[in-house]
Length: 344
Image (cartoon, rainbow, N blue to C red; front, side, top):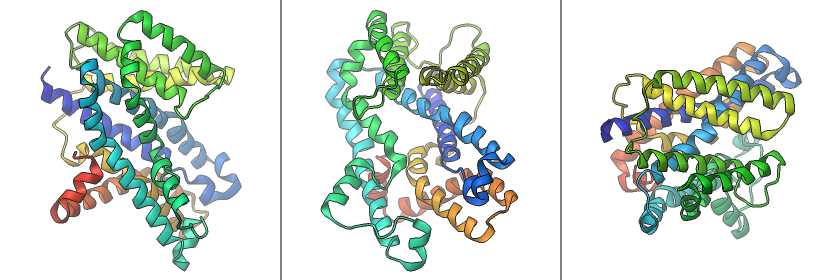
């Protein structure tokens, strides 16, 4: 399989994961329907999509990031890889967090808009600025980028643990126990580390077997999505019966892998340019989703049809907004656009 085909596949899978993230953050039934929202058909439908199906995007993004990082990684490449991630992750992380903070500071001081924002008057001081820029206080969607930055810093250690089956098991098993016992002693989420570690092991194994692109599958690959989907359902059942987090982690991991293999079994066209701009769509979506939802509720509160329709159309609205931002950014402020999108 060609390198070009591999990156086309990555583009489509990333795009689907991004749409699922938007679905996860677009829940509106409780806002539109009040206390009855979670129990209404609309609320249940949104929960199934956003809180169950869409959650595969979380391990999906971590695992995809690890696959791309470790598919050609050696310890001697560490500084080179870190340097690339400064441009593609750290700088956009700081810029978007600053932009979100500035946006909330301004919006909270505009009478009509402050009620929609719902945060009171956001203080403008050094302490708040520092927390906003480095700890994403006003850009909650960037918790993932924060976690990914920590994982990138740990990448040499992850590689040492994942390069042999024994090392992987000696790390993954205790990590699974930590997740099962709901212990999380550090700022790095244990489940994020398990997703990243597992995908790193997959990348290393594929490279050792001469399948650098990961998409060169064993015979019978068309059965893999079905097998992984059934596995996800079984783990979901166990999670519901036990109430434990570990089966849920395995469920989401299986779901993310199922989607990856499903896309590899489908003959997909070359992704349009906007489809490849998944970081822009992801970075942009959080505030507009909240703003559009609250404005719609102020006009059509209690309308179940509006609630469900808005939820289903929200990914399309955000992609359209990203398309407009892309056109304007690339034409009028190309340097700034590259900084915010990590040079993508």
